[in-house]
Image 1: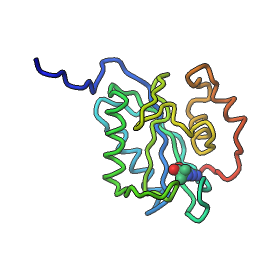
Image 2: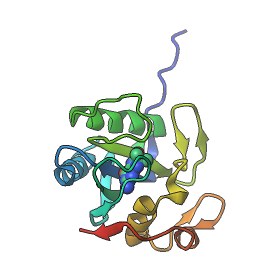
Image 3: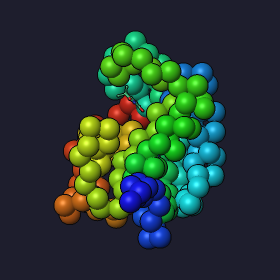
Image 4: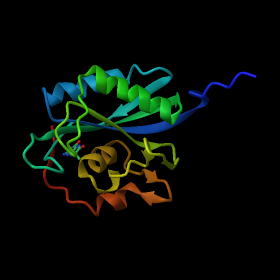
Length: 171
Ligand code: ROI
């Protein structure tokens, strides 16, 4: 018997929030362009996107400020298929993967949440492992979804109270 194909699509729509970040090669256009490409993903609708924000770098300070945004998608793609699609967009925009931890990047697309699923795989951790500490994720997410609950009944508004909100401004 043939091995069944890995399931890439599910008729049930999932809500997923994507973190977008860039700090090289005109980051403002990188982020805008990435948002237009997210709107064209297969089996996916872009529901809303946040304003763009300028934020000081988390990690090494000798790199340019970032432009960040968060996008809300409704998708029938499975989480790993969505990940592959995001990697395609990163690569198409010229992202070079190097070994420097927390170094500058042309474009970063992170799945922050995927419905209320918890995924712990080497390649994919959802909720995104750093999102609860990152003002450049929580602030744009709050702009589009102020009443959002993270998995395990964690209100976004409560998380936002725990982070420093300096070093970030709406563009
Ligand atoms: N810092 C900011 N401000 N914004 C980011 O998107 C961002 N992304 C990263 C690291 C290097 C952790 N720092 C960041 O990957």
